[in-house]
Image (cartoon, rainbow, N blue to C red; front, side, top):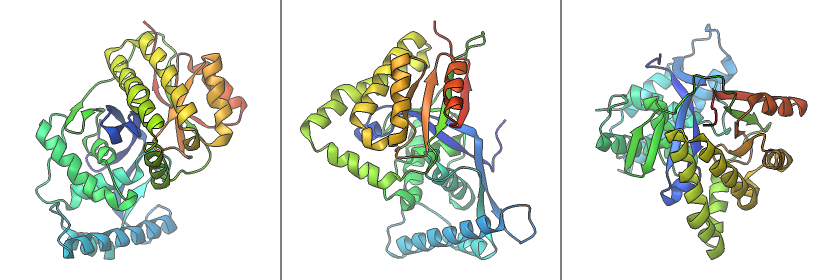
Length: 323
């Protein structure tokens, strides 16, 4: 069951960085973390300091929207005046989604804002038409650009629709279902906490600078994007033997060519997974900190390993089993 006024975190299973070059992407809502718009009156059972800080952030966000509107650069129909009035009444975003951890905290906020203050909005539904999905993604991208300088719109779109989404290209988006085994498989998708936040904007700039180098750009186009797409298509088709094979190659590519995005003290764990075949790690979002994303055929082995290193591990999806 989903709740209309609650917006979930998102996990981009595949597609980080590659979407810049129009690769496929696969995202899922993650209900373990979520947020909703609320009002602080000093009596609620919440962290008052957090509520006040969030309210101030919303005030700065609203000021940015006002500036865009005055310059004629706010394309989306949005009731900025009502937002400002509510901020003055104590509006804030009550959220358990950790910021700068690759889980779409700003995306959930933007989805909530669009639903509450957008004008002539597109209703949230799994059956939104293809054209409306693209328009919705573009509108949400505009609202989220304040937080990252530039936004693909994927995070708030996933938070708003609340279903797994397959982005075949910038103009082809569809809701999908990820196969879940009902047998006694012990496979899993999980999050690994690196212990500190990451910063998206500088890492994206670093990546774009690297892509100006011919050899690096060739690797992205000839190896990185095809393996990214292979992981998505084999996972959705339920061909898990092929999936784990593609995933291992993709994980190795990220370790070798996206080394700056992987926290140094976690590179040994990344290598351990590849060497033992007990699990495969990949970036979760832009990297640099936050969470890493893990996949394993044997969750008990992965959990035992990280517990022995005193590293927090969160299960996302269970019971993936090889064919």
